[in-house]
Image (cartoon, rainbow, N blue to C red):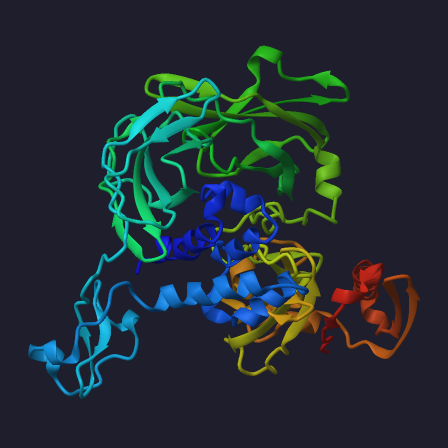
Length: 559
């Protein structure tokens, strides 16, 4: 039974318990007891991985019988297909073979069930497959575009043989562009569940071609979805793209000739009406308060609409710059422009801001690891490794867990394989954060790393996700920085050789309310005092006001 409407069975059952209230799904959703029946049916829950008792008790500690009944019924309909097994003596052909070819219905193809034949179990076509199951709605769907911007969809049912309430499941798919295309359409997505023969949908974009289908479901099952409807296209024109958000400076480079190269990044809109074609970038500057570029002759540049960064080269080190950014999209021959956003910055400040930007020489175009506002498309993503403040680093970021009880994330990283065999393999490290990103510090060159992120909650940890990445060789950065570490002089040296070994480590802790502050002190070789300053600064930032519930720290300083 298809999972998309398998979860409708317990909804129909819940509504059938309250048929005196006209079998209203909306009424059930707003009723204290009836709504408990609907909780297991939410798409966000995966009941295959937990028992109904452990699922319902945290949600409804005092009274959870409605939730338990619905949960058990849902597990049943997701594992046992509709219809009855034929009598064992009626089996023929392979279905009559004395073998155990299946254990559960889900091991059988199509609508077949795992049935007994008297001497074994085989996949057989059930009898009375649609007993008590409602007929499909009529395939003609009627569309009405309302003044509010909503789309109303209506359908009609054939003669209904079901005495139980019927839930209608509405799905849609769409393709962008000025022509309909089933080949380029998205997957079918459930957008509504209702007991009425109509539904009003909010999120209808003018630039999309939509198709819909409807299935009727009750406690006995379903006959499936109607054929896809004719395409619907809004009569309204698409809106101009939204203005780019959070325009900011991401990286700065001082070139050999004294000029400055900067990288600007911004947040792209999640779902504009139509895909962005490109971005327009304008910039002008002043030196000592005097403009060197007339307003009408601003410098300009374009960036691809799929990207969210642009690099401006050969800027003057003593210049005050003003940058404007605008998104552009096309609808047929019409060009749609967003409002402009602006940013002002000083190259002097940008180049000296070591907290955010690393100083490198001409030719280094590494952008600092992606900022935390970026939403990864995969469970885990790694930014490009970058060298900053005497350390090789990389940022890893992930999607936040949908589980609201997740309080923090445990991150573990370790080298799997390193090219330099003559040195000791770097040790594993781990940390804990409440954010959806972390910067991995003190990485070694020419190593393959494994990073594992595991969400944590008060009642245990969730499934961990892992990703692999490889750090560059020291030789790959040779000549690109005037302050690279000594490992460039020999391929066998690793980053950890830059720092001297700390000694006589001592610690004291001060607990105030739910926060803990740690004060660490140690001694370091005098030949590398600048490394000591860096470590003390990093330690104080990391430890001050750390949350007691999510504070965990491990690291190693190697000589």
